[in-house]
Length: 307
Image (tube, rainbow, N blue to C red; front, side, top):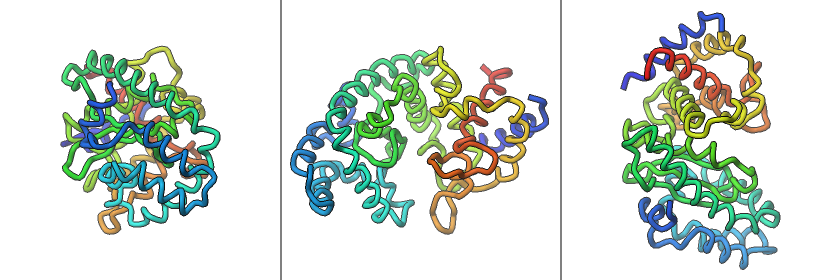
């Protein structure tokens, strides 16, 4: 694959410029023995509400993760690439369990909306990419640290995980989010770009291209929204084009960085700097996740020449 090299060359040009049905979906990822996630959550929360964390965690393992152990280890917690996954998991679950009293009643409806929008957005994606499969390998989960994530099962199967609890808390616009994520799944299946481009031995230019393209696809599948909405962040939508030249130059300085540190097998700090979110400022002079904005503008530049 020669995308990263092309992306670097195109960035140099920019720098020099002046401006689903629930059961088939679950079966597709090998979780056919698991009940619907809403059933698991109701069993968990009815037993766990008001209990000490240790008891809640044990009930979570029994009802939520246990029936989906392979999915949670490989996609939700990314055990292979996260040496601190157990400590991170405990910390994040404590925070999420504290949030459940105000979101628990919203989760069943959110799961239903996800299923309904998966049907709609899968049809729209196939209009843009006729090779997309009719029933995407997507699964609804409960997860404290993401709203949606492309991942890979141990057998190499790409899968899209959609966290009903986080999406309910965020009040996310599924009409914008799902085309973005379904494209990532499509690209994993057809071009081998898995985990949104965060793969061993890949350069930081690959997620730049992937996130920019997924954002662009979302704008085509669900037109009529602002850049801030497509980027899921208003301050990114407000970045003026006059800043594009400097941003491209700054990114080019680190464009040779691997997405995953080959020695520590951890996510590169440069990836965090350009693509991660959160309240703590990560990239001096830019909003967090500026890589998405830069990637979107890169794709728009490409579209001047390529179909």
